[in-house]
Every structure is written in C-alpha cells, then in structure tokens.
Length: 239
Image 1 (cartoon, rainbow, N blue to C red):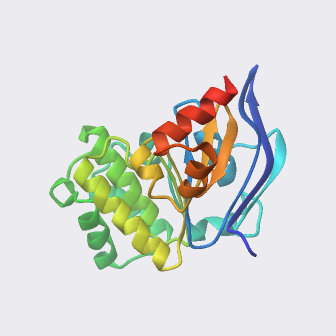
Image 2: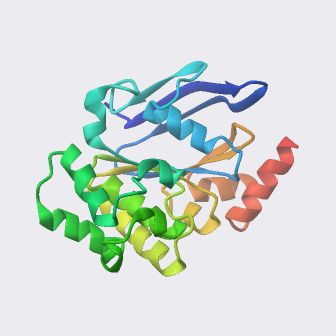
C-alpha cells in the first residue's frame, strides 16, 4: 500500500445539493493532510465517506488498503467527528466515557486512561457529567477517545473547534509528534493558521477541490502572500 487513503471521483448529493462534486485525493503515510474550507465546503461529508458512515453516490475510496466499513479497519483508526456530542455518552462522566471506550479496544491499563486525560487537560473534570461540559471541553474529550487505541490513522473533523488558543498549540505539537512517529492524520479545519501546519492541503469550496498541494505550492501557483489570500484568489476564479 503506497497510500493510507485513496479517494477517486467521489460524489455525494443530498436531494438537489451536491455536497461533494467529483473529488480525488491521496493521503500518504506519515503526513498531515488537511481538507480546508468554510462550512458547507464538503469537508465533513468527505470525512464521513472515508469513515464508512455514509456511502458515496459515485467514486472509489480505499483506507489502509481496504474499503471503508471493513470491521477490522477500525482497530487501526482514531476518529473525532465534528458533532462531538454524537461520539460521547452525555449521561456518563468524563472518566466513565474514557473507561467505556477503552474497554471496547480491550484496554485495561489505567495508566493509559490517566495519560490521555492529562493530555487533554480534563483531570479536574474527570467526575463531571459530559452534558455539563462546555463545547470546547467536549472537543477535548472527543480527541482523547480518538487517541486511546494508539491509531495508525487519525481522522479528525474540526478537532480544535471551541478549544482555547493555548491548548490548540499543544494539540498541534502533539499531532506533529504522532506523525513523526509514523501516524497518518487526515483532518478538516477552517482556521488559516492550522492549514499552514499541514504537510499538504486540499482547498475545498462548494464541494470541489480548488487546489491541492503543499502550502508553498499553492502560494506559488496563486502568487499570494499567505493562505487567506490564496484561498480568496482561488474562490474568486470559481464565482
């Protein structure tokens, strides 16, 4: 397998809305690949197809060499959805959520739970019901759950939304450490500073990929000074 993820000709429609419009991209092993764009660009729909949560109307998707939905695949993947509440049990405490999801992976090591809890800085909320947490804290817990099984592939939909700037910096340092250790990360974001931290980008708008490559490649192609200007120039060509 030369690529961790391969997407070819992916199309997904909802009624008259074409959420994803014939997109193709490949994610290499050991890189951070970002799907970048505003709300409604098709990023989350793409992630859900890659995860096997929804089926595409057209196209081919391969994840770690198999089709999405393969049961054996998920032991190697960590996933944090955009809708953090859907991944969490609201009537359980923070620690109970960690313990439950750890049991699904067959993890009985208490030290792993404590280490993960400390990383997302929720030690003082361990006995708090999830329904009482802020949106940012739920995002932190969702990321913790995605990291529990030490995944080979980490798929993160808006992982830092609602997270304070200091913790966002910490998260990104850790993402880079994971990649340096051989983990592959596919993520979505609409933050320009996070786009600049990705190894490669697919800049999305209205379900299409406008341009793909490293940030330097995109800046060179558009003649822009920074990510925001490059995105503006690319969108201007479409509308």
